[in-house]
Length: 281
Image (cartoon, rainbow, N blue to C red; front, side, top):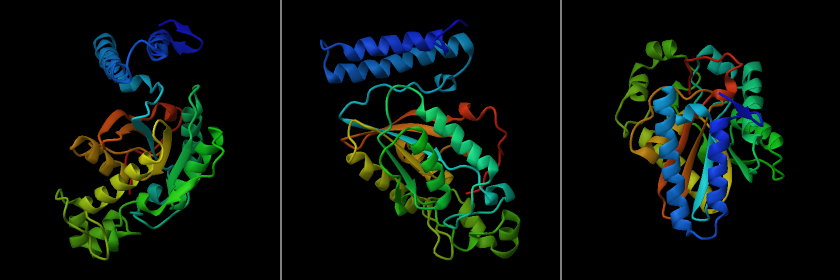
């Protein structure tokens, strides 16, 4: 397929349509937002029919953010030494490994593309998320320092933190069953959280920062368990599959508290890197 300005032709067409519609002063904000949704649906159907792929496979093309919404880019931190060795981190911390730093640089470059600036980068106060967020802020020219929040931490895994699954199966089988339970109200021994508690905490954190950034696009760097919880809060359904290190997703949060998933699980920027399919929290 022909490319213009280094971008696939159909992306150029989509961009031109979006710019012409948003530039028009003859339509209301409500109609403009409705058009944007219809545009996404049209191109999603067209691409699926023509190429057998979902629109998300083409990459995320950001547009202006209406003042009734906040667009939140959710990023999982880079790979850590404990991810590599299969240890359950929870709210324990471990360092990014070499691949983790490469992943952080890759997602930072991806999010720095385009003409629409990032305003603020929030991260969990755990080091693996903060280091990833600092790379994104530097690449995106974000003047404000990264803001850390404890309420964006990974799920507390109680007595399982620091163990491999094999070790947990031998020494803490009840706690491991609690972690693997499909029930949202089951907590983990040793001060661990239930899925419901995690979801309530994580969603409240995102809604709080969204209220402070209406009409803006912000980044939240957090953890696999948190991202699963946010997906379920936004859609009402559990997130299937793993959340890859330094993948990113985009949600829109309205002033009325309505969540919409705009883009999910983008790993296109990691194609030149090898990364594990099996991740630990």
